Image (cartoon, rainbow over all chains, first blue to last red; front, side, top):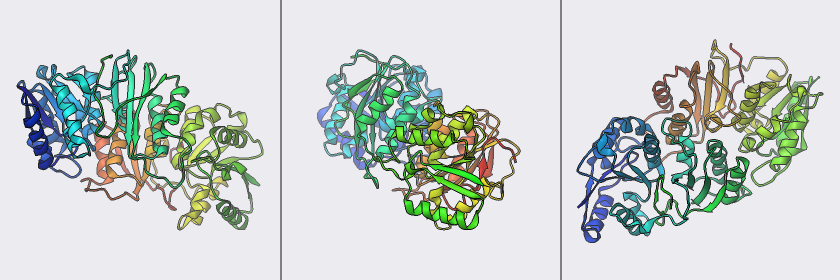
Length: 270
Length: 270
């Protein structure tokens, strides 16, 4: 039996979404037991409970010797407020666990990777069940957590890799949660940002990526329409800023804020 | 006669706005001659001309020995793409000049302050003429440029100060344009950002402000309504992150994306 703890370092999920994923797991992954922390359903303003509550739930899940993985329930915003304090309380019991999520959960993945705790992995979250095709995203996550690597991002890089939401990684730069990324291929994706904001984030991020092995661009989706066209597409923006800082641009990556989002275990070369 | 060069490192202005400001200056500031660079009206996608064109106009204005100040026409987005290259070409003729603007022009002000070139000043721009009460904002700028300090931000700090748009300063952190701010009081304002995004920017920015004398919060205006309340007001957010990094929170500042936006000369104590 693979026991997987679910907690929400950012925003809450609904009981309906949790029940749908529990039902899918029961039907298709008989070896999986999902242990969904009650904190996932709490609401405190924007967040799934206040900072102290989210820290407590993270620590409880990470240090529980009976679970093999911590699956982040949903992104949104809020993990940056709790990641540093929570990770400081993680014990030896957190060390062997996989921590799976993306988007705002990237603050947790980044902080864990910096602290060399556990196995941080970019991949689908429980709340992805609500997307069109979301059941397949959930299956991809549960397959990974039960030893089936079929959902792995397929670019085949020969360097250790990390994957982040562009905004999340840009905000991590220079903070106590930012891991060293020298020698890594960095995959980034974005959703619901204007192209001028994507350009601005690349201006910032690429100034912090000295020594990386390269950058890959995931999907830049749901770009809002601005009052005038930006004049360049997302890939042109990525190429521009990579060239400016002599970062090898390695092409596209199969990640994004969508049901096709694939799996990227941190620090592993393919 | 005070000759003031106007160029647009970010987005274009209209000829109507330029004519309105020229007319105001002619009527009320007989000692002022505005030299508005044609580049201000050019359009290349999002920008007031391509990067090379905006760099050339910036260099032309900054190095023109016949003008005493460079007034940035408008913000928007784009100065971060050209500031470093332009400033590298500024000559001794730029040294005595005032450079006036705010918002996206903060990339220029930050880079100039880092390079110790000229007198960077946060204050109204030409395009503010379009705001309600914008004529008074333009008067405040022209008064400052002609030696009348009545528009000075009134907090009376005893430390050298800088003022920035929150997003702009957060994006400057760790880049080749970021000035050292140890010992400074840092004033920030924001417009049209969700409170969760304001919180996120404070998470990032305050991690980079070690050694500052304190932070003041300008106006956080036109906050869009989110699908749920954030749960804290802007000042509570500022206090939270200042406390987290032991930065003295010094209260409010009289700056913002509005016609009341006041003047903050960089590096000057009141």
